[in-house]
Length: 113
Length: 114
Image (tube, rainbow over all chains, first blue to last red; front, side, top):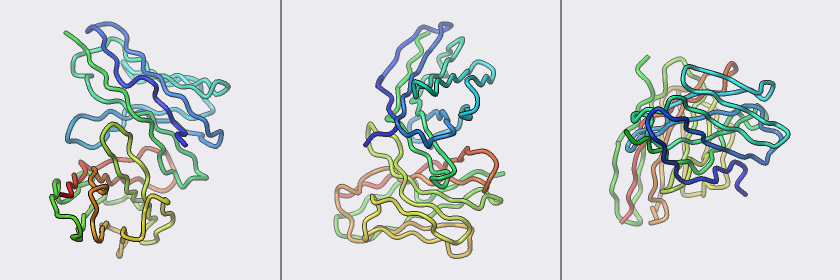
């Protein structure tokens, strides 16, 4: 069962525009959500996170929104830059699961100059 | 803080052979996690340690897989009698107990079973 799902395998945007990546989850026990970025031949790099007690967290160009009732979160990147081109993974965790991360399938973001 | 390191970065082996991977976590991190990633998928949890104790194993971890963290520092993941389906990227991550949930990943070991 896929508890964390990213329905868009790929997304292409123009430099300077907004990138919006989406993620849905099914397990109500998740209480912390994270976004990771991954370049080829490297491990995932932590980007930004949000606790379930919040609905928004912002860090520079990156903002994560959480809608608990819809079990949905999104990552906004504004403005998008060509260096943001990578695979983005949504992940969920909770203390009851030993803090292990459950990942979505990933979305390949391409930012065109 | 030198980050999480993994060795080797690449391993090609013939079906039926045994392989062992090593992970060195960030030094003050007492939790260490192993994940496996196949093409087009996100990383999948395999097992994790708190200090030297292995606290959880995924059902993905068949009896051909074994992991150790003997002194609570580095960890090894061994796969016995490798199968072609074991071909994947094996990722290691670490974090401190408590505090935030962020895990810090190594570069991974890419295993190819021929």
